Amino acid sequence: MRKLYDRLLVWLEYALVVIFALMVVDVLWQVFSRYVIGQSSSFTEEFARFALIWLTLLGAAYLNGRRAHLTMDFLTRKLSPEDLKKRKKAIAWFMFFFALIVMVIGGGNLVYTTLRLGQVSPAIGVPLGIVYAVVPISGLLVCFFTGMQTQGHGSTQTGLSHNPSA
Image 1 (cartoon, rainbow, N blue to C red):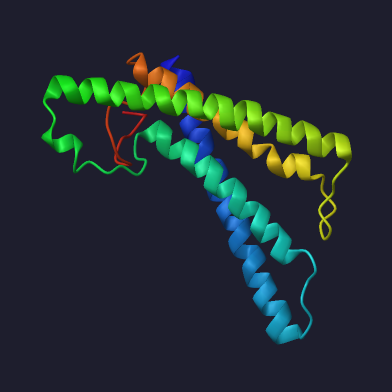
Image 2: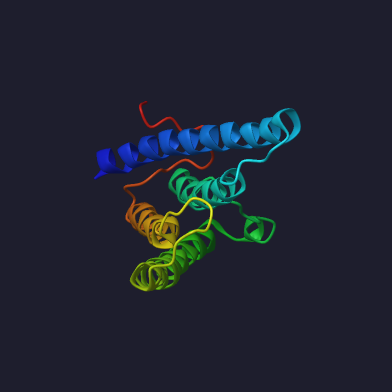
């Protein structure tokens, strides 16, 4: 399971880099076409918006897997090591159930509904269910990473300096 955990993190790294690179090219093309050519492309704004949605949600799952997500530790620094361990476990289970209920189940329902209704983005023409599919995908990743971490199989270090190949 540890190999799967590490491979998912590596895959997410590559996916995030590709999405970010596509978004940069897209925005550069938008600026170039608007100010140099004098005519805006119709798809660039919508693509940048969709890419940002995917980048944000997959990035949140990635940071959860690396244990580098945003924390406010000014209250937890005052806890004893035993209380801190209990608090971290409670927060992890809260995150797991939030991701399961809101992101996986609710996001899956959103994807199903938009695909069933046939909603399509106006400029690109892609089904919105595909755009929204990142919600349950990210939720599954958060559930997996959080579950592995609570069982002691996930990343033990916090932050982005953790090297899975070491």
